[in-house]
Image (cartoon, rainbow, N blue to C red; front, side):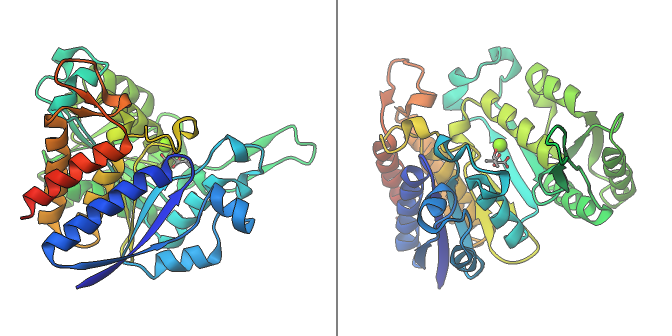
Length: 361
Ligand code: IPM
Ligand code: MG
């Protein structure tokens, strides 16, 4: 069996962390007896510099022709002055849309070894945290009509959702809940926004299909508060593109570090897109400092969702846990307690590689 993986290292620390995840995937393939071919697709700031566009057509084709796409990060201060549709981030939004990956799964999982890195009171997270954020990814205000008035003195962005878009993302939420603690919380702003009222209406209409799932609703402001007040109340959260963007950063921090959280973006068919939820951290790019674990865990999701290799996905996740057990910590997750070994990107990668090879012997 041979799979084609497109890689989009992107900007900043993107290439640092993608290189590690590729090594881990190669090791897994070698041990498990399948083949992987990797093709790099330039996108984001690097593509602006080389080709004058954040999403070159050839890169898009490489991704569409692959079995799965592994992405690092896009953006940086160098390109901050560019107009919205010329920025590196336009490459990221463009490839999500082009691949039709409307469902963004962002597990906020706390590794018990990193409980000390959680900024919340220990009693609030005793027993760990395991929340799945299901973020709508190809609609809403990110893709709605936007513009500026002729005099430049007013500007607008539009939140717009169709029932079809809401139904397909909520279906992912209900089904995910079925495989977990069977609680689904739909987060919206239905006390103000008409589009949110459509989300609520749609969720209520769908609920009878999943009678075992306990469905609840929260306004996004309250949800943001509840996440730090009592995070263990959450199992699956399903929400719109922008609310999901915001809440997933918050959820990541309560699990310890944004450097640990992976994501999978999937559609109805075609390749999935797998990326860490963190950004390009240009201040530490190329310095062997970035934590590669979020990207390694994204590679595990790639194995699970696109290649249907559950055992291998679990082996990678267990290897990450083993590296943490052995005390390896990058700067973002270090707590200076005894037994910790502060390491860089590459050494963390080596620790995971050694552990994953052992697991797939
Ligand atoms: C994310 C990021 C992106 C987003 C940015 C870089 C466009 O914040 O993946 O969460 O808002 O979706
Ligand atoms: Mg974000």
